[in-house]
Length: 472
Image 1 (cartoon, rainbow, N blue to C red):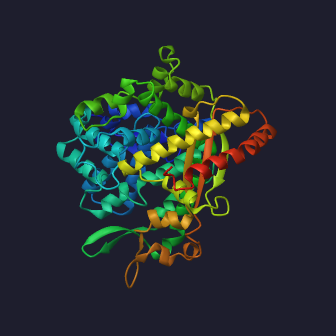
Image 2: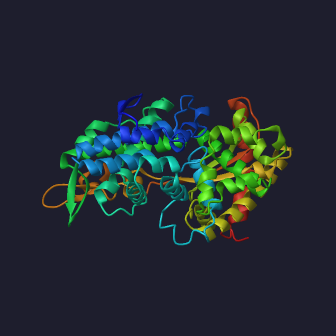
Image 3: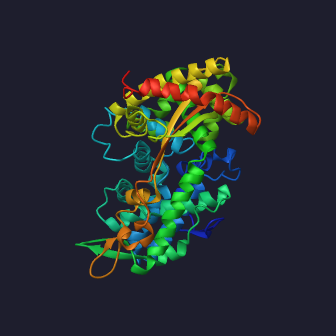
C-alpha cells in the first residue's frame, strides 16, 4: 500500500494524491497515459502542447476533490467521485480523440448489441472494460467500487449530483482541460476563474433528487466558463493545422486497414467487447503507433506515407475553404447534401452512405486538382472536411441547458437568468467546407495564387456532384 503523495502540477499547484489512489496511478494502465498526448499533433502549431492524458487525469482528480469539498460531499461520495475522475480516460487510444473516431468506425456493433446506449462512445466501453478487468486495478480497488465507477462514468448511476461532477455540463473534466490546454498551448482563450466558479456552485433539489446548480449570484462566473469553452473550441481545437493533422492521422489508420490491409491495425481498433481486445489495446500509445508504422518494412504503404509526413511536418495543405451559405452555394440541394456530411456519428447506416459520398467527392476533387495544376494527385490523400462552428448560445444550449440557477420561487434555466446569452442569436451557426491536398507552396503569395487557381474547379465539383442532393 502506498502513502499519501503531493504532486506538483503547473496548472493547479500541488495535487494531494491519497494513498489508496496512488497505487492506481502506479499501475501500467494509468502509466500508459503518459504516452498519449492530450491534443495529438497540436504541438505542430502550438509547440508547448505536449501535455498528456496522464497530466490531465491527475488534474481532473484534483478538481473533483475541490468540487466535492465545496459541495460538502460525504467521504464515501467524495472517494467515489475522485476514483471515477482518476480513471475516466483509461480507454483512450493513441492520439486521444483520433482513436475515438476510428473506434467508432470499426467497432463490431453486432457483437455489441445491447451494450451501446444512446450517445455512449466506444472508448467509454473500453474504459469500462479496463476498469473492471485490469489485474492491477483489481488489487487496489474493490469489485463494488469498480462497478460503481463504471456506472457513474456511463451515466447509469442513480444520483444526479455525483453524475454531474464527472459527466455533466460543468464536470471536473471540462474544468481541467480548458485551463490545461490553454496553458500548454500558450493562449488565454480558455481561461476562467476556477475558484469563483466553485464558489458559485450549490446543491439544489429537483423533486426528491439533488443536482448541481448555480447560485443566483454566480451567473457571471458561469458565463465566463461558457465563453472560455467557446473561444478555445473555435481558436485552438478548430485551428486549421489541428484539423489537418487530425484528419491525416485518421486517414493513415483507415487506409492502413482498408487499403494496406494491415491486420494488426484492424485488430487494434475493431472493438468487440472481448477481454482480449482491452488487453491488446492497452499496450499501445502514440510512440508505439508512430514507430511501428513509420518503420521501413511498411514503406510504400499509405499508413507509412501519411505518418511519415506528420513526423516530418510535411502536412497536407488547405486548398479550399468556404462557408456553406446560400450566398456561396446557391443550390439548396448542395447545401443540404453538405450539411448531411457533418453528422450521424451514432448512426452506422447513415455514416456508411456519407463515407461513400465523401469518397466520390474526394476522387472528383483530386481529378480537378490534377488537371488544374497539371500534376498527378492521389485521391486517397485528398481530404474533404466539413465542420460546424456553433454560436456560443447554441453551444451553451446543448451543453449547459440542464444547468439551473437556484433561488426562489424555484430553480430556472441558466439562459433565462443570463442577460448576455439572451442577447445572442443562437441561429448564428456556420458550417464550413474545406479541402486538404498534398500540394506545396512556400510563400503567402504562392498560397493565394494556388487558392485562387483552385477555387472555381473545387466549387464546380461540389456543385456538379451535389446538385441532386448527392444521389448521383
